[in-house]
Image (cartoon, rainbow, N blue to C red; front, side, top):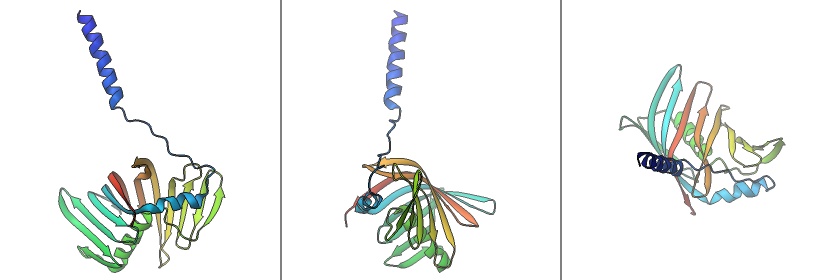
Length: 209
């Protein structure tokens, strides 16, 4: 009797654990699709809202925080960064006008706003040339170069060319799917002196105008 109960309990536990195990989902394959058409299909996303964990590194110093980011295709941004539940930084960009608290210099604010917009709306490339490099395409535009996996059209890395000649380097990892839209859950942004690593806790996509 005891053995039967133990066996039944063990089977129930195994079934429970299997039901809770994350389901492996494969990225969609676009191996023979037109790259421009695939990117254009993502233009239906007009706004991205996300909750993030943030790690900032510079000169051996490592700072952690949490963030809420609302970013629109037109470049409007609302970024709030918290530490231990307290708001430590906020940046708002609306119609090209940027305000931030505490105040940072305009050059840094513009770099942050442009970097976030191009980083999250990575597919929003206009007038680009596609170079076939084996397993990847390198998409070259006037202000950006984007490396995407040829089979899945998932972003691998990106270089953003700033107006003053500086560059931002962005690396994408760990794809997740939300409402049939695939997006990197880990993003690392680097410049020659510092880096920021973003890990997405939750994300939503608003479609349409």
